[in-house]
Image 1 (tube, rainbow, N blue to C red):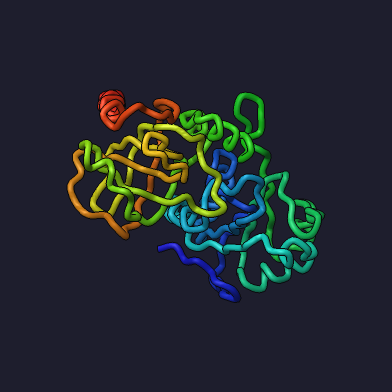
Image 2 (cartoon, rainbow, N blue to C red):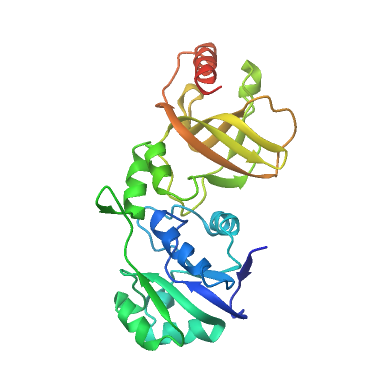
Length: 285
């Protein structure tokens, strides 16, 4: 089971440590992970949240799920606070290695740390108490794989291209809320999730995908955004699950959009919306 290091907690066993912000795992990050696995040591990673324009791809809770699936032993989570922003490179490493007994460190050649991003991979090599492995950047079609490009694709609704760059598909994790229950009245009951604060969200629209629940994984039609047919401007995530029967209120689920179906639009009536959803269901199922 993945260990999440809280404030002041230490990982005392010798380990391989991945350094970066790790907003999820993409193809570039995986090169670090594969190299670290060659050591045979438990692997941990530093996670940073709160410093990304437009929000992070994944919340801390979502990243914990991703990193546990990837086989990591622990993560060290840091919020990008004012104090964190202004810590010197030397002080950052002193604090880090006082908590983590790293026997080997892995980072990309563009790794930066400390105030003003003054810390470099070369400085890390000088100051770290263990061997430092600096790996070249991973490219896709001649271009560095980067979170900014993945966000750009998600912002266009191009989920398939974004997922090709991610090691684990984009998803939204949250607790199922009580909704308006309007879908039940025309044969399309949905589960409802709120938007997570600080998370970068895919373009508004209707998607085909899947939903992981405590009762199993189900194919789904997912609405990301408002519900103009019913005059609701508030943005939510609504998912209609195939062949589902049960109660998920309060349960934690993960919604994976997999293909863009159509933009959100206002229908003249609930009956027209029902007809469109029936067509969406044929496309997805």
